[in-house]
Image 1 (cartoon, rainbow, N blue to C red):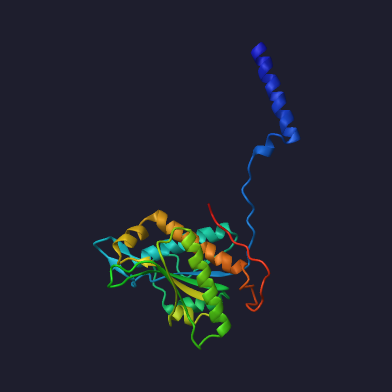
Image 2 (cartoon, rainbow, N blue to C red; image 1 turned 180 degrees about the horizontal axis):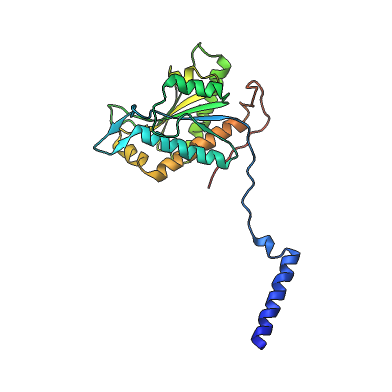
Length: 243
């Protein structure tokens, strides 16, 4: 009887605490996502009949790695409140003109193409980001692309990237013919034994993907971009970092 009475008193105390919020105060709630209106196109390089760089000896195909990168970046961006669009979501071949058309017709605010590098020099390693800086696009758009790439590289560096090889100019179709700020990210060299081992590790790819997502967010939230008007300059910059 005494035990039953004790249990009943404890139950009453618990109900009282619920009423005044002393118990609920210790329950943590997930942070609310802020819906973002910016349109992000993620382009997983290669696909289908186009393997990219591949090796039977080391059991990899670039087209598969870039798709896993794109899925991971997409996942992180969704957690931030974005609705990123993929130019391909399976092992299918999509030609370069189609990728450009998808982004332009989809009115993308940024376009990020993801690749893995390869060199005959097996000592070469590191991440590099390409942007177009020619006369076929406006100087303002080119400058925005450079800012986007720098934000991505900076965020990737904070997330464990082995080495930054910096920003580079290139005449690639997907970064030249797209109408919005656009970059091509070479995540690392599959020709380098050390970096190949890292790129084939899921955890390392997740770290790099996290950096790409953070870099995109930092650009879109920063002083060098506003949806609908790239000439507008904001007064403050917000950044995000996943733990």
